[in-house]
Image 1: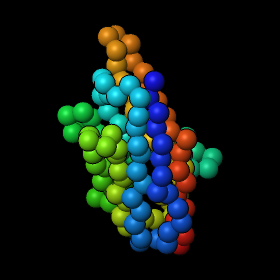
Image 2: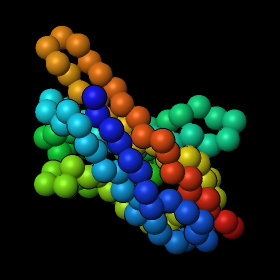
Image 3: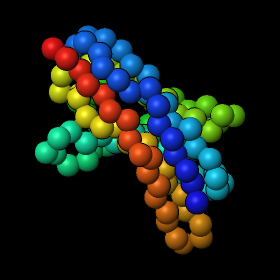
Length: 119
């Protein structure tokens, strides 16, 4: 099992910045990737940005140039630097971890942290 705990969401004005973090614990071996997803009210959950164990990143076009994911392996923590926030970034942000064990894949989710961007 992997436990994920997010923090660092909040209310910010458009153009501002936030840096939510996600601390992971438990069976950290074989974690292939960690990332952030978000779900706005009435919409499906979508990928924001993810980083693999090899430090490759994958991100949504809507956050390109504004958001950056980083990973502190010593602390088992990932961060999402969010700059130039827009009202459309308002959502609950979920931390995600993917792990493989042999041929079996596992996926874990945090409880979410809410980000509200006011115009």
